[in-house]
Image (tube, rainbow, N blue to C red; front, side, top):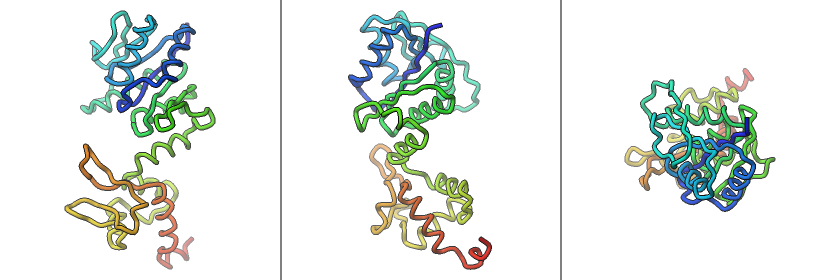
Length: 250
């Protein structure tokens, strides 16, 4: 059986980068079968490009009996979703997982922000699949040495930050039980004037803006996300403010 490549990418990328086109040209020349989804964006662009260059060894995966988009002449594969979730994103994850497992390697066209593309990269790494990553912010492929979980996590967090729940989860995973939940974390930050609350929304205090990212949805401020700098800062803050009785037990 010929090799198979799973190509995916971020919906914010509106045009196939030239280096990705060159990769697809090489894939076509090598007779490698392309697995791709049926969503708008990279999926559609990859299908259209393959059609344009006359390459038909393409399989379009979908969680629907009739794919949302499939260029004529391509095969399709229905992925029978097992999840009971009504959320489209959760159900689409199973399709992506199937393509990762049924391919030999992955090519991901990533904006550095998309959670779906981030998950596709990590899933490939976790399953010992080869993976090639185009990163929009540098307009090129990442060097192979940079395609490791720690590097990919750093890029994702740099662009997305952490939620309060993820901060607490991280601290607890490091054996730090100073904050039992997000309420305790936010209360502490409010009391120490690290953050403030305006119209029911958490915002960074002026002196600590560098520790946070403003979380927006369609241009509307929804709250804050926490940066890697915040993680380092809060770990130091905990050490300095731990009650004496706790210190004596360490």
